Image (spheres, rainbow, N blue to C red):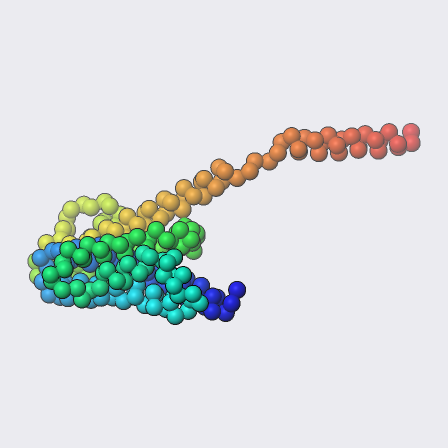
Length: 241
């Protein structure tokens, strides 16, 4: 393997997480753009759209720079090329229908089989748990802040709401009344559902692996025991009386 090829493989692995995060952010970005929210949320949607596109563009440009055969890379990665060429954030208003192509970015999540295996490991679940806790604390605090004009909520109230939301309990004693609060609520819900799905998937994978593990060959073990008994009998027969 050449040095250039090794560098390209390392660069591709480094782009895994940024691309997954960018792909996941596609849905909330489109939701913000299609909603009736005002500043600063429409500005945030624009920033996210630019950021997502720049991440995909940076990956494509980097891989073309490091790959020895650029034309072959373009032929082997048509999805990456389509995402960059068909989903630029500077499309004019007359091409609003073309923005639907941004959903192509979600297809990059199909390339995460190897990363998914790492997520299902003990280390992956631990990191996901830390991320979930951070999202609950930060999301609850932010929720209390944006809902303060409508509701008198403390940071502790916001964290309580985030915990009940992320665990899908949902007592209903605190509900979002602003668009910003609903956006934060959707984020907390997705994190909670994702973490529960991750833990469930890891447990199922370990259970399946345990069930599929090869069982000891009972016949082979019995044959070994019989052979040892036979050897013992021969030794006893040779022993002088």
